[in-house]
Structure formats: C-alpha cells, structure tokens
Figure (tube, one colour):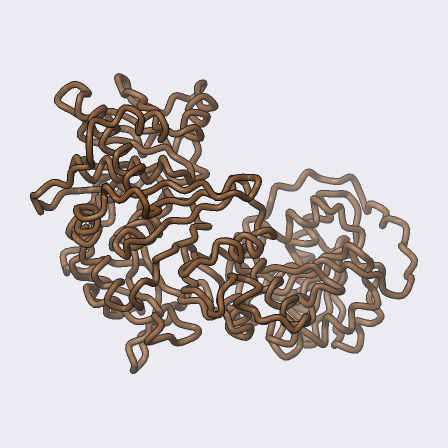
Length: 583
C-alpha cells in the first residue's frame, strides 16, 4: 500500500486530475477527480468511525462497478479497517458466509438492490448496520481532506474468498499487498496504468489487489464502462476511452478478435480501430483465458500478458510481462514469490505474499512452509511456469470431465436434437452422454464415426452395457464417411487430432443447416480451424472455458438442401434419466 498512499498524500486534493471516469449509457464521460473521490472517502470514514462500539472492525463491501466502490476502498484504507468485498454473482448463502462477522456493510445502489432481493434470505449478521455509499451525498457533507495515517503497521486489510471454495476465506495482509504491488510495478513500463480500463468486476481479486491500486500508484485513472454493456460493444468503447491498460475476459477477448479481423480486412490499423491509439495497450488477464484464445490474440498482434494467481498468495504468483513473455505459459514468478514443483508435480508457492487463514479449514501454508496450490505445473529452464491443467488436452480414451459431460447432455436435451454426429472421440464417453440425452428426450439419432475398429467395438459394448444401444449407432468409419452422415445435423462433436479438426468440419459442412452447433473439444482446434469458424461469414464462434476448453460454433449459412428425416421412433417407454456424472 506504500505506493498508493504516497500518491494520495501528495494528490488527494487535486481537483483537476481524474481518478475515476464512468461512461454513461449515452456515451458521455462522467469524471470524478482525486479530490471528489478522496473527500467522499473521508466523509464515509467519519461515518464508519462513529459506529458503536468505537467504530467497525470488519466491514462488508457490496458495491458494483462504480465510483462508489473506489470511495469505499479508500475509506477503509484510511481507517486501517478490514474490508470484506462480496464478489459478483454471489448467492445469498455465499454472501452470508462472507459477511458472517462484519459489523457494517457499505452498499451502493447495486448493493442496496441486492440486499432488497435477498430480503427473504437474510445475509447480514444481527446488529449489522447498512451504510449507503452515494458519492454526491458524501462529497456534499465532507468535513475536510482525506487523511493518510502515518503508521506503517501491518494488518489484515481484506478478507477474500479462497480459490479452493467460495465460502472459505483468507486474510490479505497490507504488507503482502505492498510487496505484490512493488513486484508488479518493477516489471511494468512507467505509466502503464495511467488509464486503466476495467472490464472485470471491481470486487474480483484482480482489481482488489492489482488494477485499482496500480492505477492510483501511477497517478492514473480508473475507466469504467456503461452498466450492462454487452461484450460485442466493448471494442467501440475501448476505442473511445483510449486505455493504456485493459483487463481481458474470454468474451471480451472474442469481441476484440472479431473487431480486429474486421479492421484487418478493411485495411485499417488494428490498434487505432480497437483502442483509438497508435499502439496496443497493456492487455492483461483479469480472469483465466484459454490458451487457444491467447494464441488467436497473438496472431492478430494483440499480445495478452497471461498470469496465474490466487487469493491465498495475495494475487499473482507469476506473470508474463512486456520484458519477458512466453506464449503458452503463465510467466515467471514475481520477485516476492518462491516456487518449486513438489514430488507429485504440484506447484508449491512461498514468500511474503502468503495470506492468513480466516476459516478453520482455510489454506494456510503447510508445515513445510509452502502453500500447496493443488495445481500441477512444470517450470522450464528459463523459469517460465507451465500449468498442466486445465490447458492440457485429453488423450484418446481418457474419460470426459464432468463439466464436458454435463455440457453435451444438456445440449442434446435443450435442442431436442434429432440428429447428432460425432467424429473420433466416442470411446472416451462422449457418445454415452449424447445417447443418454436422446433417451431422456425420447427421440433423436446419435451417430459416432470412429476410425479405429477396436475403439468402435469397445464403444458399442459400453453403450449396450449402459442400456443406450437403441439410441446411438457406432460406425467404424473415417473422414471420407462423414459426407454420408445423416442430415441435417443439429449438433456435431469434433474430438479428434488437431490436424483432423478442419478436415472433419469441411466433410460435415454439406450435411449442416443454419443453426447447426459444432463443438470442438480441448486444445484440438488449430489456427486454420479457428480461422474458418471465426471469419464471421459462415459461423458465429467463441471459446467456452469448460474443462480443457470448447470451441462452440453456430452455422449461419445454408449448405445444399438436405431433407430432414422424420423423428426417430421411440424404441420403448422413455425412462426418466438423471443427468450423467461425466463418466
């Protein structure tokens, strides 16, 4: 926090320098200066200090992506009070667990609306006071300038959900945050966060211990998008606000990729079209972005600085930086972090950033002094960290993850698909998921194409044992046979070698209709495949961060006319089928 408080001591009363810029729904920019924000924080701090008994010890924060969220953060910092932010999308039970021991809750307009919606499921402990956070009202009643304490004592400044579970909490120490920020700033160009565009919720870990503090440390401005802006509109917004740094989420990255491809086809410079600047801002990951998507960004001249972090280590463990970046990795460990690989391949983390367990079951460092992350990784000769999960592609015959199994089953159920075609990957359980969905619907035809005769026979036996043989046909067939698949195809699954993904798609295209959904599993899709489905002409496509990654594409244009067969007759009374577990 030292770098943040150094700036605030010198510039808290600067009325001309913007600290938060919010884009209104009509596109106009509403700018709040350092003086506006810090004076409101002073007024809010005075209100909290007056709460009995002698002020609040732990304070919940229930704010959206607003200037009020920054006011709340600075008020707690000045008071040396522990903040407990509730992450976006939290349910009432999760919020109740996170706020179980707070004496007050700071709530902006969004937070008050959530509390009202949770009225039937109270989330606040008895006696907890709700303190509204309204920037205009606080500024009007401010008693003076923001006050930065002189002491440099360490304290638990934030309590955040642990990576291991939404209701397991860890305490983030102020000195750990300071070490984390110093390590990040040492790797960044000067002024990198002068205009930090925020597309990841402010209550997430990335902003609690990185983006917001870094923007202030750079004497910069936090730039917030209009409330509810769709991902497809992000490129237009980023071009208007001209960021120097931008957090990238998977849907946001897909939108940027689409805009970059359009700009390139039209002969316009990509940086100017996407960011309104001659150069590309610092694109960093506020959430985990699948490697196929990172590779796509790289090919378009949009380098994304991927990293790995967790609350148990006060944010980032490792990070790709402008000076040292290696695609396919999560970068080198930061200077305040120690790492090693355990005997079973687990990534172990140590150093000054380790958080303190708040919950009894929390993830304290073990007796060996290392935080056991539960993540398998490798560290190469140059010190770059390679995560083994979730980027690793599944091997042939390896069971599906439960998440992929649920996705396949759910799609068949929701589409009520009459015709599902798969290629190559049926021996690992995907055909079982699809056939179970067809049986639950009481209609549909699932046809799997397996080039290997032994695998095809094994899949047939597995379907028979599960009572699903009437709902699925397994063909010992190769690529050339896909052109004779039943048509029109409602859902196609490609789970094959990377070099076969595009040929399989091409072979099936003549059997598709507008609206056909194509799934390519894992890291199998290659550059040519992604070029085909993401060109915006014949498909609408994006990655889903499920399991090892899924590229989901929707066919937009018609192929040659193909007759739709009559629905397949039910072979017997349909038996209600629970959703499979993924095996």
